[in-house]
Amino acid sequence: MEKLYTIRLDDIYVRAFHGCSDLEQQVGNRFRVDIVIRTPLGELPQTDDVTQAVNYLTVFEIVERTMQRTQRTIEAAAANIIEAIRCRGGVHRSEDSTTAWR
Image (cartoon, rainbow, N blue to C red; front, side, top):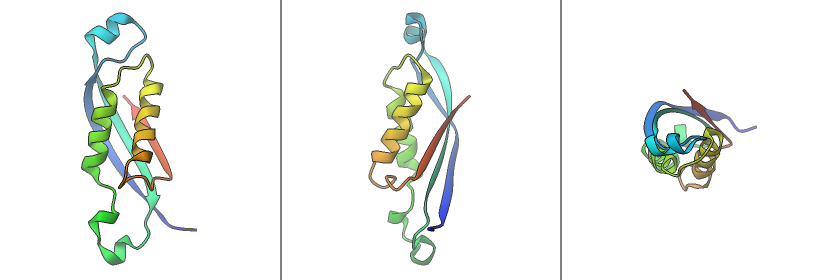
């Protein structure tokens, strides 16, 4: 079994317009997003090749961009983030992604 490593990006604050009511979607809220990504370690410790590592800036940008798509529920917004991270080159190796909201 291949060894996994964990990347945590906590306290990503984004202003977005999610909510069940039309008013929530008009006024918007400040959301805090925490991301946990587990991905295979592979040869990274031996090669020290940054192109094989998870790019934190890319993950942050994915969160920011994805949160701009208005959803009625934060569960839908979280699912969008997870799917975008899994599909994005450079972070597609993710075995499991978790999005936490506060």
